[in-house]
Length: 323
Ligand SMILES: Nc1nc2c(ncn2[C@@H]2O[C@H](COP(=O)(O)OP(=O)(O)OP(=O)(O)O)[C@@H](O)[C@H]2O)c(=O)[nH]1
Image 1 (cartoon, rainbow, N blue to C red):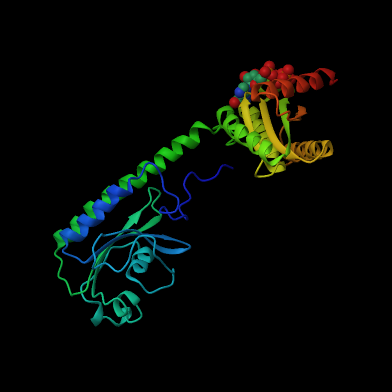
Image 2 (tube, rainbow, N blue to C red):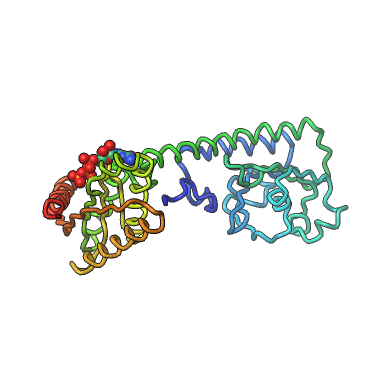
């Protein structure tokens, strides 16, 4: 329901993270080419958009600078590593016809390549860490160990970045229903309200509370109660637009902040949500449950807390009127 914390299909260079020091990575790539006496060293990222040089060793002999993108189907050395997930050492590409169509060999004049795969913490390929030389090479096993060691520095940064993003997502996510928790909802709702103000858009705030939820728990058990909470969260989530926001405030209380054109939109949305509850109840064989919904149009002169209070109040009034 929530977006993947890190979109591994985006180029890091274009979507940098504060947790990664590209300066440190630059030093690592420079060190790699220095230790190998190589004219060019790289960290390359692969995504569906192709291979991008993330870091390029700072040498005049290096023809590729950071940011260059090569198409995914080009017969370059890095592609072999990404496809096999294995290190690749080519001491002399001129004697192997499989590199005849490799532009690095035939346009740039490189002969030797040594590269290792770099992985994201979930074992998906990030790309490669490699050195290239214009002359034939004879690297010993020690050199191959060395490049693996240096690569660990890069992978541990990728791990740190993923872990931090996961923690950030956990802090704003309700673990049972996987929608925003109170903190996440509050942060996103504040942003959306400011945006609506700028764009002159109308918004509605809907407050949901399951009726006599305690009875469901007592009668059918906590596990069934949890399933009802998940069904309610998912039904609301499915009924709203991706640009709207939904959250669980706690217990059996949910909220949604939605963009609307007219009061009729609010009625239509409530209808869709109620139909969603009925469908979920039937399909998942849940006990009968009803939900009281309070709705208000967002008054931009009120604070966020005042808006929540008002919507809660409308919900309570509806609950009191129910038979
Ligand atoms: N299964 C389950 N129950 C929860 C969870 N969080 C809170 N509850 C229960 O939700 C119930 C909420 O009870 P009340 O606030 O009295 O609300 P209610 O029974 O729905 O009564 P009304 O709102 O007046 O209709 C309590 O019994 C809590 O124990 C949860 O994560 N899972």
